[in-house]
Length: 134
Picture (tube, rainbow, N blue to C red):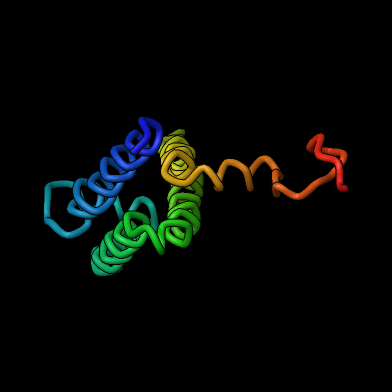
């Protein structure tokens, strides 16, 4: 396994551990100020529990090689919703955006085809990529 692929897997597991562990656990457990914080964002405790379940499922999808791409897409949407929620209540928290970028970098390191797709490289001959059709 190449160093970049190993780095991608390590990043992926750290991200999944954070999302499926630390982040989701805050939605499953009771702690002081939880209800007030989520209420400020417009959510009720029972809904946050369901969002935590969703977060764990999507993190698992991201780790499984066959569903990693789908997991990354779903995590991007999930984190986009988190970002909008923070901005809506006036929190200048850009952590979800940073996390989303790192998710795609991790997936691209695991599977370099992701980077090629992002850069528009198809491997087919074209003047744009310098390959000439014969």
